[in-house]
Length: 227
Ligand code: 13P
Image (cartoon, rainbow, N blue to C red; front, side, top):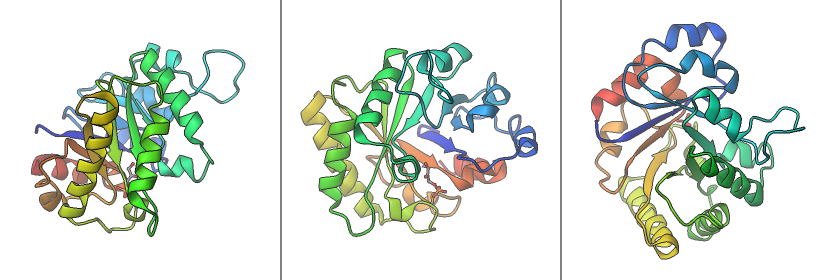
């Protein structure tokens, strides 16, 4: 498997689910559980990521988890800018940028999610999301871009390979203009054990960000085995 596989476990799992899951995944993937379950996921073959991070440093910020705290406990990745945070929590481009800067300062790899709603001007939205999120970030070595069209998240719908490939090229062009570097770009949105056999043929993709299907270890293993 030479693709990056990231499981965004969202808020799907109960404590019992977690106990039945953590020892069953033995591959070198990246799993992002709810923050309260992080200790159960640490010290396995996989890497552990958070689903969100504070834009503040340690201090009087009730309910926040800072990059320093995350790094100290063994977190190596963080998802930033997921549409479920942009739109459910009204997270702004400026907050997203601050979170990215804080994570990178502590050497935590960033998984930056971008993507358009159905009917939106895709190129315009993606360009704005990328440039605002990555303001003052000029080295993409520790950044993974996850292209997640919102109309594909949790819907069972995926774009065609051609559509994804064109969008990935577009993202790559913008980032190359900005940073003179190629970025690692992955796709997310209804990836499962069946469509992975089609999606894996997109040759400019570095991997996949998987939501619901990653919460079932047998399902996730099937996806990993297909790659
Ligand atoms: P689904 O795989 O459940 O569509 O979720 C995708 C996603 O949002 C990953 O971050």
